[in-house]
Every structure is written in C-alpha cells, then in structure tokens.
Image 1 (cartoon, rainbow, N blue to C red):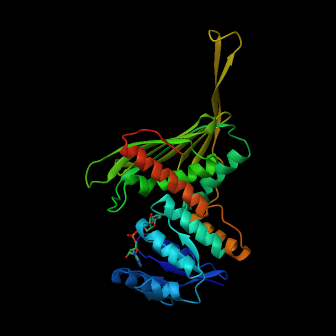
Image 2: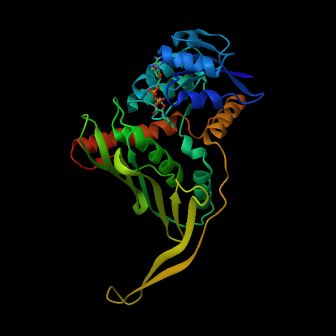
Image 3: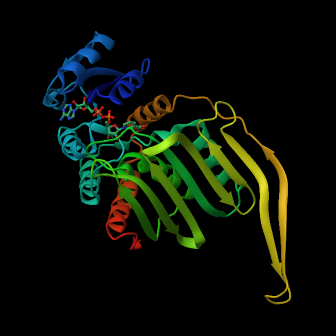
Length: 333
Ligand SMILES: NC(=O)c1ccc[n+]([C@@H]2O[C@H](COP(=O)([O-])OP(=O)(O)OC[C@H]3O[C@@H](n4cnc5c(N)ncnc54)[C@H](O)[C@@H]3O)[C@@H](O)[C@H]2O)c1
C-alpha cells in the first residue's frame, strides 16, 4: 500500500486527497495545511487521517512514500525539493514550478534520487483528451494545421499569478500532448485592468511544419467558454468541454487545392462531409491520473506527465510572460 501525504487543503487539495484513496493500492495518511480553517475541513472529511499545520511533519514521516504538493505555485519548488530530499515521490500541481530553472533542478534531483515526479496535468486524463490524442495517433485527423482554444469565464481572480499562469497551463499541457512537437516561438499579448495582474491574454505558439496554436484565456468574460478547434488535413475536431454528452465532434470538412498549371489556375474545392460525435469515456480524470501515478511508482516507470512535461509547459509560460512584457514580440525557444 502506497502511503500519501497531502500538503495544501484549499480549493483543489480536497479533490487530490479524495482521489488518492484508491482501494487496496494507495491511501492518504496525513494532510498538512497552514490554515486552521482548512485543517478543520480536512479533519471533518477524513476523520482517520492525521491533520497537521506544518508540512515538515509530512516530509519527516518515515511511513509516507508520496507527497502531493497542492499549494500556490510559488511554494511548489521548495516543497517538492524538500519532499525529494526526504526520499518521497512527488505529485505537484500545475504549473509545475514558477521558473524553468526550478523545474530543471527538480528533474535533476529526482533522477539522482531515483524518484518519480508527476505534474498534475489533469485534462490529459479526461475521456475527451484521450479521444483527441487517439484521433491524432491513428492518423484520423491527418497532418495537423492548427490548435485554437478558448478558456474564458468571469473570475476566479488570483492574487499571486496572472491569467496566463492560472489558466493557460491546462491548454498548454493539452496542446503539448496532442501536437507532440516542441514550439519554435511564442507571441503573447494581454492587458491588466483591475489588480495589476494580466487578466486577459492571447498566446500564439509556432511549431515546426506550419502548425500554429492560439490560446485565449480571460478572467473578464461574461460567459464561460471552453471550446477548442483542432484543424487537420483530413478531419477537424470541435471540442466543447461544457457539453454534457457530445463533447467532441469530428467534421469531415476541409479544403483541397490543386495547382496544375501555375499560380493562376488554382483549383480550390471544399469538402463538406459528415459530422459525428464519438463516444467519450466517462471517467473522473484525477482518479485515473492518480491511479496511473501509483502504478508508475510500483513499476518504477516514468509517467508521461512527468517533470519534463511540466518543464515544457513552464518554458512556454516563461516565454509567454517575456513576450507579453515586450508587447507581443516573438520569443524564440
Ligand atoms: N489541476 C487542476 O485542475 C487545478 C485546479 C485548481 C487548482 N490547481 C492548482 O492547485 C494548487 C493550489 O490551488 P488552490 O486553488 O487549491 O489554492 P488555495 O489557495 O485554495 O489552497 C492552497 C492551500 O495551501 C495552503 N498552504 C500554502 N502554503 C502551505 C505550506 N507551506 N504548508 C501547508 N499548507 C500550505 C494554504 O493554507 C491553502 O489552504 C495551485 O498550484 C493551482 O494551480 C489545479
């Protein structure tokens, strides 16, 4: 039985604590949170579990194998580093760290200690993203043209990070998983309006082979939108994560161009075929993710959403921040 200690029991911590209790495989034995209110909530939800105020008690505990770091991003590095130094595998919330240098240091430390890092890129474990990845891998979409995503709603305003570091890690991790290429350059624009943190931003990411991604994140939208378009040479996908049943629609639509006798004889034909909605697996993504992590630990295998995947996302976030500060100048990878 893998024993887990959870640090941070605010908004997301309760979900991690609940889903790490996997019958016969792993169990949460301790929860730490600085806030007394959070400690009370944790103790009510998990009467059998030891609840403490100081994370050091979890780090020092000989019985704990895995530490879950579910605290604000600026604390991830110190807590994850301490956990690795105490010989624990770590599950770290997104975004992995607050800088590329921190991510690299944790990856190196974990490798040296032969410990696993998993970064919580929860969306990769949803039925929708699994299906999209399958469509790409099986070649159903053909060569990818673009990835265009909109993740907007009113709030929740954060006080320590801007909208890019808050919302874009989701899109960047999904895009990284689907496109499976390293970006060449990033352009980011945005603006702050209320609390000196950028609250609306537009990211453009250039990949080799003319693949382009666009991500729109916004805390100031009157409505919630979670829609992604993925354009491929053969098929196109519309993923609306707010749809209850038909989250993914595949369109057999596209454009074909032939240019037989020079540039003035361009033949453009539009393909407007069927649309269908494939069956999507109904799973609790976090449960699937944590089960996979425990399995990786037992088999001593690297999860695909490991420290390196976390680093790729942090590298894009850092580049986006740099571009934003330069009012949209391209930052090359
Ligand atoms: N994967 C997802 O979908 C998802 C969703 C929401 C949040 N998150 C991530 O989870 C992390 C936490 O976000 P949140 O919204 O739960 O934040 P939160 O502010 O609601 O909760 C953080 C908790 O950590 C506690 N804490 C901070 N430093 C501590 C320390 N050193 N020792 C013990 N306790 C400490 C705080 O008291 C607080 O209760 C962030 O990295 C965020 O990006 C991920």
